[in-house]
Length: 248
Image (tube, rainbow, N blue to C red; front, side, top):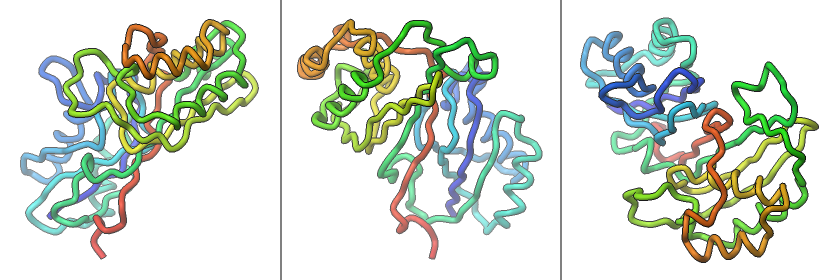
C-alpha cells in the first residue's frame, strides 16, 4: 500500500531534502523515524529536492508499507519522535502507482525579503539594505509568464531533459518593510527561484531593465542573469495533485 505524507519543516539545520553520505537531511530523518515506528526499512520519495537551508511550509512525500496503517496514530507517533523542525500535517492512503514527485501538477514558492534589521525575520528572510522599486519588480515579474525556457535561471551543469517550465503566477507583495515574492509553476529548475529573485532585485535597484530581462531569458545564459539570493529566505509553500491519486 502507498501513503502520502504532508509535512513542513524549518530547513535551517539540514543539508536539504535529499539523503547525503556525510550530512544530515530531511529525507534521512524521515526515513529513520518511519523505519523505527513501522519496524521495517522505509524509503521515502519527496515531491522536490529543496537545497540546504531552504524551508517548506508544505511538501509531500510517499512511502510504501505492506499492511494497512492507522493514519492518525501514525501521524501522532511520527510527530512524537521527529525533531522540532519537522512536522507531519497529514497522512493519506493513495493509489498504488501515485508518485509524490512525478504526479505533482503544480508547485508554489515564496521568497521573503526584509528591508529592515528585524531580529525576528533575519534568519528566515533575506535582509536587503538598499531601497527597491517594487513596481518595476512586479512589471518584470509579469514578463516571466510570457516565456517557457528558463535555462538562464538554472544551476549550471544540471542534468535535465528540458528547461521548459510553465509559470502561472509571479508577483511581489509589499507588506511595508517585508516583501514576499510568490511564484507558481508546473515544475522548477534547480536554483531557479533564487536566480529569478536575484535578477528581479537588480531590476528593483535600476541596475537592469525589462528589456535586459527579456534578453537574458532569450540568450539562455546563466552568467547574464542576476545573482542567486540566499537560501534561508526561500519557502516551498504548496504542492498540488489531481484528486485521482487519492483513494476514494
